[in-house]
Image (cartoon, rainbow, N blue to C red; front, side):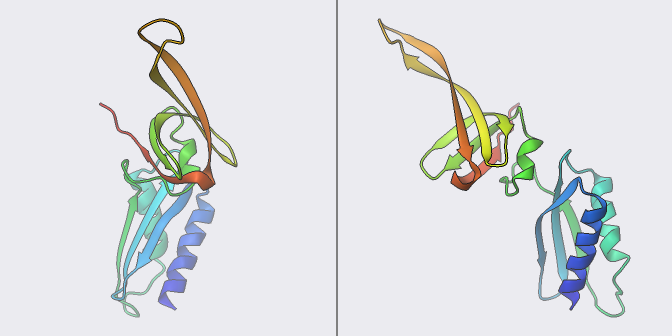
Length: 153
């Protein structure tokens, strides 16, 4: 009953704020609620507070003791929701597919998958030496095993 109530309160909050979406929610046996959210334009502390209040203010601690933590998806956390790709257009991703590992710049997203672009050094077709070649790949979401944003300094 408690878990159902928490899920309903969370869904109601996310319906009100359609720019936010759920990444993960866990509720332990001792009622420790952990919610990880992300947003189409990122997540602010205020966004976490909004979700926290929407849940906490509608639960009765006299009825059920609980602990609540609402956090944003970390910058180095793997992408788990297709909506997360949109906000990372222009960033470098490391994508593990069922057959390959590719590191490239996320150029575009679609309903079916993502488009990556990267440069490689290849031998010249004629003569000695190497030439820089621009590569591009369209990868279906279903072929992605794991994708992470690469933080570069």
